Image (cartoon, rainbow, N blue to C red; front, side, top):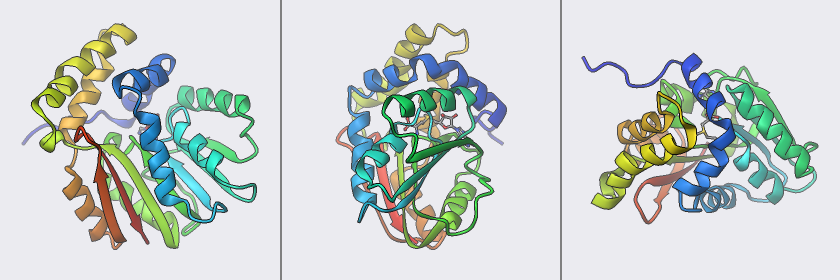
Length: 236
Ligand SMILES: C[S@@+](CC[C@H](N)C(=O)[O-])C[C@H]1O[C@@H](n2cnc3c(N)ncnc32)[C@H](O)[C@@H]1O
């Protein structure tokens, strides 16, 4: 049997705590500036009238929650969850700077077991978080449980680069860990782990099938031009 390549949640949390100082910068550098565009696209596909109650799972330093808050109107709300205290602290500072603290609340919590009430959100979103969770189908069921009927799920995630060019696969496998090492200077390079989880994660078709299997409707996805980022949307 192949040993699981995913880290236990304590180690995941420690890894993201240690990355917080470089996380936003590395997102910009490694995505060649595209990560903001991908989050904006998710927001555009999920928001309808601007008054939605949004849940952002695995919120990290808050870029997706902030993108939602900027698009929504005053009656809307965004709640965000993450396991890493350092990521949450960084997010709180960004919310204060952007004066978004009244719209966005953030708490420490496990995306796979949120303990939030059934059907309490109009939109549930997760940006680059799902592949860190040990059981993605269980996490998707939890996300669906939290959606009201008719609510929308948006998942932005690296996808197994089956359709990517040889150059892109080389970039992920070899270049991302090197750039990560230069910036993080840790003996155990987190960006080697992150590159590996991309190669191990579901293809876009497999993730679409998961969403259909848990009973979501209108399941659709789009893949970016390089073939490495997929944006799935679905309705409950
Ligand atoms: C790659 S970051 C993505 C952050 C952010 N959503 C973004 O778009 O940049 C993944 C985040 O997932 C968080 N995470 C990992 N496992 C988690 C879990 N079980 N529950 C909640 N957050 C988790 C990590 O702490 C980290 O902040």
